[in-house]
Length: 469
Image (cartoon, rainbow, N blue to C red):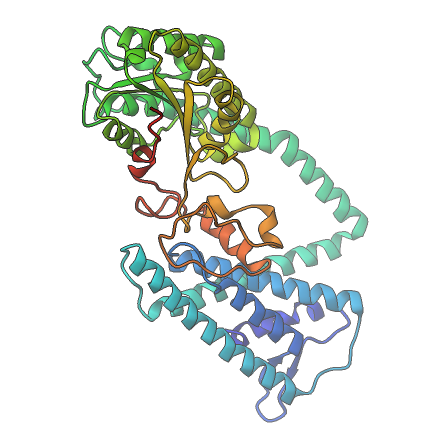
């Protein structure tokens, strides 16, 4: 792998750099990469082959390896341009470095293959064969060559335009992207999310039970619940359990959505149950069915679950651009339910539940109320982002293989806090920078596994809810 892309090491020389990046063996005429190039490429392969948290397809691994190899070459090329010419290494030393680098890269790939199969065995996923490593190597070389080719083209264009013109062109492109392209893309995405949220799924039928929102006698019309809300009120093993949901289209403002939810809870007899679970949805309005089924099993059906939608966008988009909306919605809903519950002669226990962004939003509301309101007596946070929730007095459900639980900028220089996680698969040791890179890649596949692994959780979210009396 090291030697096969040695030719791109000559980019600096062809682009006008004073250094000569490759040498020819006098006996064979073959091009041998410089020692720095071999070291950088070997390090890139080792970093990309380090153990991951989740099983990884060959294509994903190939892209990661290729990007890191191209980045390593860019760093080496930039360093040589900045430092100027240096005395050339002997061809024999270069050959030794390239050979040792190739053997190290092969060993890293084999170790990665074995680790992938350990993960897959623990997660009941089909194991991979030896050609997985070949697919990764071939794909990585293609990606690295493509990126280096694009970099070379950009360097030539910059050289032809000159320094000042290049800076002006980059500035114009950046301004156009910020003020024109980004808003247009976000508008298109928002329209798409809204349409997806409103679309009716024929496979999900309107509930007939009086204990569900969207039913004929409900105060919340079926069409306004949103995609995730309709799934929520139609699910469950016991259709007599109370499930109340208010969607974004059910009322135009947060206070009206909260008031509508409490009113529909009154209609459905939610406060006559012994437990009320306030479920804080994720960004798209999703409430994990496993958690609700677990809660209904835990309390023998004597439970009501309520949720209010605050966004129709994915959690990552809501987390970046509208996290305050999630916090305000959670705080308003928990306070309204706690206030209404307290008016009962025998108040029900109020438990707050949230997964991922829902855990982040619900945590503040729970902490502010659990000391002052005795009816708010417990909380369960599933898959909470690293350091984003207050665990005091709450139950944490977190898989050791969940990258969301581990990922933060601090992962660059310090190991993650794994005290709240439960072992569900082999976990890699922490390595500075390397663990951050690997965990960042794992985020994209956090939901591509079965419940009990990654960012997927089972009915134990509900069965772990506390009994407050």
